[in-house]
Length: 116
Image (cartoon, rainbow, N blue to C red; front, side, top):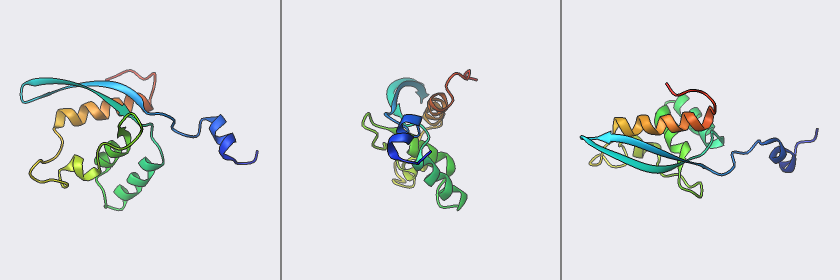
């Protein structure tokens, strides 16, 4: 087999359009619901994973930044937005929101597996 963009696309080697998901989380006694778009694990995930291995980026923050995007696939967060380094006054993402985002990232990338 010769490697080509067309052949790779036929094989499903590209992540395609982001997957729409709904998340719910609680913050300071209030419950929130939002629609998010999740990019399947991709080249950007590998880049952030390599940076995390080298100590340049937090691994979880990189995973969220590589996966959570808008409906066109544009990232919503940088790793520094997630960790709070982008704006120390704003701080890091709330724990419950972080867990909700990681949950949908897992659902999209591990279809058919039961939620724990």
